[in-house]
Image (cartoon, rainbow, N blue to C red; front, top):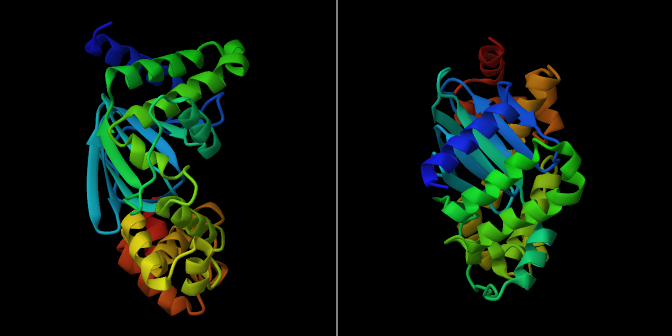
Amino acid sequence: MSDTMLEQQLLRLVENIAPDEGLNSTAIPSVFCYKISAPLFEMPAVYEPCLCIIIQGRKSVMLGKEMLSYGKMEFLVASVDLPIIGTVVEASEQQPYFVVQININASLLSEVMLKMEKLAVAKRKAKSGLFIGQVDPQMAASLQRLLSLLQTPEDIPVLAENVIGEMHYRMLRSNYGNDIAQISLQDTPTQRIALAIQKLRRDFDQTVAIDELAKMAGMSVSSFHVHFKAVTKMSPLQFQKSVRLVEARALMISQRMDAASTAYKVGYESPSQFSREYARMFGNPPARDIASIRL
């Protein structure tokens, strides 16, 4: 099958799988499809470890102060939890933005690595937790098998695990495979920073001491700062602040909480400080920002 035919088949499959605007869940719990029919303004979110493949359209993502862009038949891998500002830049009613998201299973990644002829090599320095690359014909064919499986639900209990494992294998065979593998290799700087990130993500509403995080990662405070910024492009305090603000926005949208109550719930001691930092990140104070979203 030619590359063009495969791309057309993937588009037909995802159009069927994602008929609704926004998030479309699938019968495989770790697989999601998004459909966006118009360019979006900046939407901060916290990505969990995942592989995202754009079938149609283009998106830009900002991690810290680093801006990346990817489009049709390109992939993004977030190897750790990361607060990201995403913007869909190419989408229309006629040609919606379609992306397939597959959550990364660290245990499955380790299992696949052990079966590979060429084992990943542990690195002494951490690198960015965000990667963008080109979908090769092999990864595209694996994705086609995964999306086709969703057309035959009776096959999912038997075959889904193998096909998801195949997608993990394709990630490891990509140009960034060795960097992605660092999250599953024991005692690499990336794997140890990932543990600290999980704590910050889990306890975002609490005060967490940097020396406690450094101790958890088995590093000195200075070394911890260097490796943490390499992975996330921000300091631990900036990371926690970004997570707090994203969680706050979600609470005000989904639970209609007011700004002051939300500020205290996500860990701020001062609603005024919360409003200032919220406006700095989202462009408007909380009430105005949420009102514009609802409109």
